Image 1 (cartoon, one colour):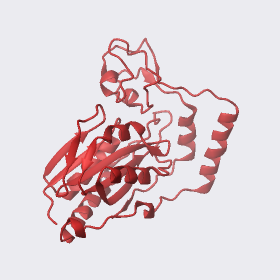
Image 2: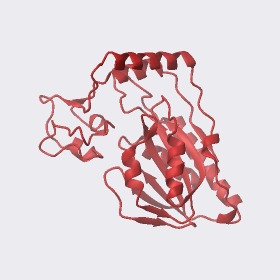
Image 3: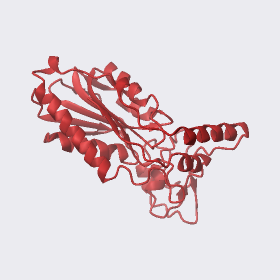
Image 4: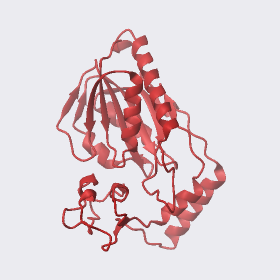
Length: 277
């Protein structure tokens, strides 16, 4: 089966999912690339044919596909389009996110022929509490490119779309997770909730550092920050992706959640990326 066009569809507030998707696309060697970036806005209804490949990469929030990503993909329409689906999580766990994404895109008409779970720097990662800091790194991106090459081989080995078999993403191998750090994390989460420790709903802003440059406004995927009022974040809209923090040149924005220290302490061992095809 010959594919000459590839559609990279991504929702990536902090660019980790985007980086993985771009590496997979490079690995396929397919030169006709269309980029559908759903990070900052909902796209108009798009239709994808069965003679083009799609790659969809999204972040995992709390063990689920980012809800805003699903919202912005709902108007995509496919006609048996072969698709590679990838979820990117912050080294804790992706839980059921890959199966959620599989069910969602299948309902849109895509045919899932490969899947992957990749690690990216956690949204809560900071200099004080690094969590999978710097990932995807060079090794991650190389692995993603090799994954793309394997997808290309799978396509070439299929006589046509009807003979291109799908995959059951539930059979993907889970990364190793030491038991004691996980148990420690769960116990401390229960203790936090039992003690009623307050959880911030939005990032905090140091008004003495903020220069009102507006970069946070441009980077916010949810429209939770308004130009001229950068020191205020709409709690009803904020998805806590922390794109505003990571893009602030003055480091005026912080997100002081107790989960950052927990994640840093309990999930220091780097998890492996996994694929199925």
